[in-house]
Length: 285
Image (cartoon, rainbow, N blue to C red; front, side):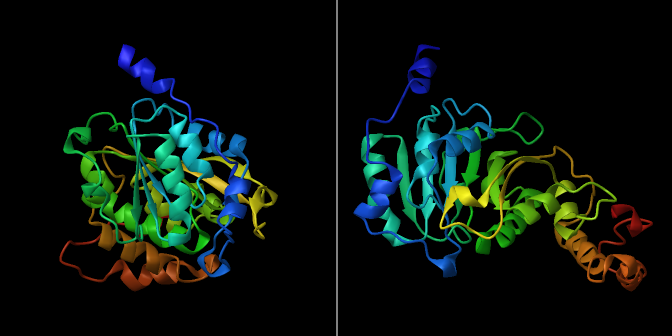
């Protein structure tokens, strides 16, 4: 218990502010990469709190950028933080943080869409799928351009129990455009109900925690941002292979809402090796 208390009491030493680091390294957000910096550490602290108790936890941060969220994660008492950053311009600033938190932070320069998170942490982190989630979390202020393809990829990994879910029911705390966050969490019958709603909710519980106004970011995006928390379910709500579910949902939502039954009709009688997804696919709406 003493060791746990020691971990939890860790605080970063005084460092240049994120704004000062941006000026020091002459960093500018790249529009083509959908980069927006979050400089308010009160907001980054609030994002980290949505992940739960991170005391002694293993964490993978996606796209740390200049490191605002990274600071909040390190100050939360984590045992081990792995950051995956594609843009080499941010590496010097992240190395400064790593030096300020010796033995706690590792840096990987690479694309999260290709990085093997299952190789980034020791197997001792793993917990059986049927038990409580492992003390492993994925947290990220995601660029808009990568957020949707990344969550779809992770949902497939979740269904297959591969990638970050090879360790068990790894939890995710991620940012999305407000509209995407609303789609991910939309309930049955909602106007926001979509392909994303079904694909996320049949595999995990999804909560839209809070909204960050666009003005909190630099540069200011045209939309607000939602913080969404995912916890994989022990048993998926649809007992069919991911690819099959994805095909049914994609066909269902390819038409406007009033005529979406056309998509269902296109697949309702189609034969597949796995059989039909259910006796009446309309239930997913």
